Image 1 (tube, protein in one colour):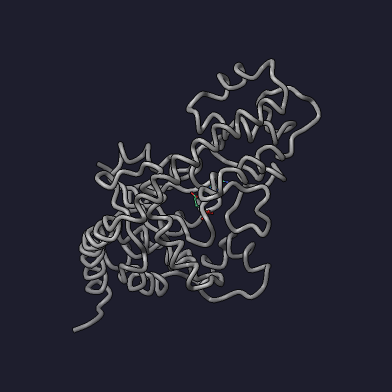
Image 2 (cartoon, rainbow, N blue to C red):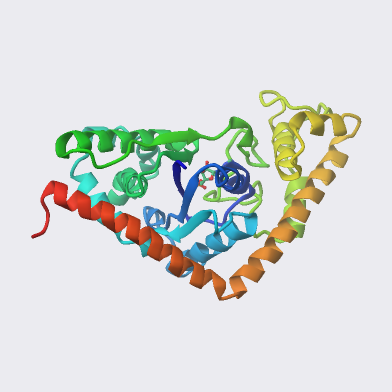
Length: 325
Ligand code: AMP
C-alpha cells in the first residue's frame, strides 16, 4: 500500500472548507493509502498564537478528525510537536536547501507582505519537507497553494540522495479537486479560511448550529433567482451547491435538478437544514470523544509508532551526513 502524509495547521478553528476540501478526502484516501495525518502545531508558530488557545485547538483538531470519520484503525493520527524528529530532520534539510530555491516560494512572498515576518515563516516549507520525507510518503494531498512546497520537498530529497546516497523517497502532490473548494459566504470569490479576520462568511465546525444557519441564510448570491452551477457568473449559488452536494453526497447535477423550481430562500433553507444537521451530529461525537480518556491513550500509541519510523530515518540521515560519534 502506498503511503500518504498530510496535516492541518491549528491556526484557527476548523471550517466546513477544511472538512470538504481536506478531511472528507482523507476519509476516502484511507481506504487506498496507508495514511498518516497529523496536527501541524509547529507550523502554527510561524504566526503568533495565544498559547492557551493553541493548546486547546490541537486536541480539538484530533477530536474533530475522529468525529468526522477518520478511522484510527486505518489512519495514524498524531501531533507533530510530540515527535521531535521533525525538527531534527528539518535542520539537516535546511543545510541542504539553497537560499535561492527557498526564496522562490510564493507563499512566503505573499505572507511576508503583511510584515512582522519571522525566519520560521521563511523556513517552514523545509519543515514541511521534513514532515513528508521522514515517513517516505508516496503522496501528499494538498491544495494548489501548497503544491510548490511538495515540489521543493522533492527537489531537496533528490539533491540529498544524489549527494549522500539513496535516503528519501520522492513524494508526489495529490492535488484536490477544484469542485471541493469552498468559498467565503460573504465574498464567494475568496476561499473560506479559518485565518480570516471576519467570521461572517465562514462556517466553523464548532459553530453553534443557529449561528451557522444565520450565516447561510445571509450568504451573498445574485439577482437571477435560478439555481444552477456557474462558478463564473453565480459564485454564491455555486458555492452553496457545492456545500450542499458535499454534505448530502448528491451530485451537483442531482442538487440542481432537486431545486430547479425553488427560489433562493427555499434553497438556502435546505442548505442550512443539511449543514445544521451535519454540525449537530458532528459536535455530539466530538464532545463524546473529547470527554473520554481514549483520545490520550490513542495519541500515546500513535506517537510511539511514528517516532519509531522517524527515528530510523533520522538515524540514517545523521549517518549519511556524518553527525555524531
Ligand atoms: P489550511 O486551513 O489552509 O491550513 O488548510 C488545511 C487543508 O484544508 C488544506 O488541504 C486545504 O486545501 C483545505 N482547505 C482549507 N480551506 C479550504 C476551503 N475553503 N475549501 C476547500 N479546502 C480547504
